[in-house]
Amino acid sequence: MIAMLLAGGQGSRLGVLTSRVAKPAVAFGGKYRIIDFALSNCINSGVDTVGVLTQYQPLRLNTHIGIGVPWDLDRNIGGVSILPPYEKSTSSEWYTGTANAIYQNMEFMEYYNPEYVLILGGDHIYKMDYEVMLDFHKSNKADITIATIPVPMEEAHRFGVVITDENKRIQEFEEKPANPRSNLASMGIYIFKWEVLKEALIALKDEKSCDFGKHIIPYCHEKDMRIFAYEYNGYWKDVGTLNSYWESNMELIDLIPEFNLYEEFWKIYTKNDIIPPQYISGEARIDRAIIGEGAEIYGEVYNSVIGSGVYIGPGAKVCDSIIMKSASIGAGAQVNKAIIAEGVTIGDGAVLGVGDEVPNKLHPDIYACGLVTVGENSTIPGGVSIGKNTAISGKTSPEDYAGGWLASGETLIKAGNGR
Image 1 (cartoon, rainbow, N blue to C red):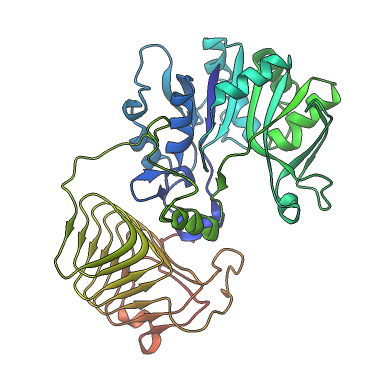
Image 2: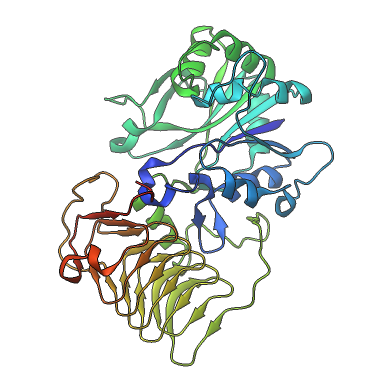
């Protein structure tokens, strides 16, 4: 079985966090990136040939994966291959849907001529043994197996949902139904018999924005193929919104976390830079936090995830926040319930996350739940105050803050810096 890992998505619901980086390359849990979980699952499950399909802002992702050393995927045969869109003799086009991206890499799959193809997304947090799913697939003589997970009925409309018989064979499949009749949701993880996948991709190759949930699965269902639902009951988080991303990071800090990053028998691997250890000053105070390597802490940190190389100055206070790699929090600054992206500089005495909670004026669906979101390499000057449900991107100056204040619900994006 070979794996095809879809990692080209923009992740627009993460707002300024993904204006310069693909969603699977966004930092998670202090030292990891979101794509590490799918890659680690592959090698832990014995899947050692992985094609990673990239498209949107791929530089960080390509650099992170490299030749696959951290995941033991640096192999002469198989291993990891980065698969961006490329110009062909007859046409050249971007990937326009999940299935179209796989179709455009038919040659890669034919080179390995596998018995089975595992289709994965690169933007979920979970641990799954794909070998167990493959055993289920074989024992049912399935053409396709879809990994499913029970979700609350009120959330089922966000997913593709399946209705199965007593043998777990799928009777009906509905993509994001307005009135769902089942709460068994597709996780976007599929095992196909290679010849079945090939036939479906070729048959639907002219379909606009060809997608697995909307096109391939319904097509195979109409052909009366054997499609089964493999039910997964472990931890699985779609970190596609700022709130779910923030929540899943915060869950890592629990005394007994629901999702354990440090299990010996199912390790999560990542690219480890060689950096010095943390430095915690005598005046610093830390309670319930993950602190990355190379961080320098002189202030106070509560209930937060701090990435590698972060500087937190004297008298600064960070609460309920995610501070990513190489960010700098100035002396006396206060950061409350914020997501601070990589390389951000926050000036001395700045206060983030204060005032009333009002909806964001531009994107109330993205910037919500009282969060302050600051995009990569942004600068926030000293002494300013920033409200809740706000987004900031770019090198801002005191003149950008009327009376030293950015009110709740406002968005401040300097030209050429994200969305």
